[in-house]
Image (cartoon, rainbow, N blue to C red; front, side, top):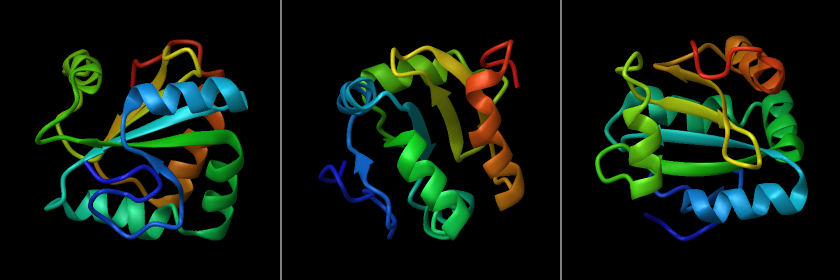
Length: 135
């Protein structure tokens, strides 16, 4: 994985944590949720999400003020990320987006590419979903 601050595979204006543990500490300290994006360097959907969708002004601003971003590598995930991904058997495509509370509780999850408007809706609604991780 790359250094904290830079996405390990793609160009992004957001600050990306290199480990889930690091991201959870930052989330608790800042009272924000966590967006864990598990992707592949060779995945066009992962590239589009990180380089294009998250760079859109409205999405960037919302992510930057409400979420801590963590980059997970689908091909060599850290153990904590691998454990979360193992629970997501209904998701079979990258990017896999896991929306977590600052305590690490799964609030929502999606897989595969998402249009920017749908991704923004996920960001806005994830903390308020009654059945966490069921999508």
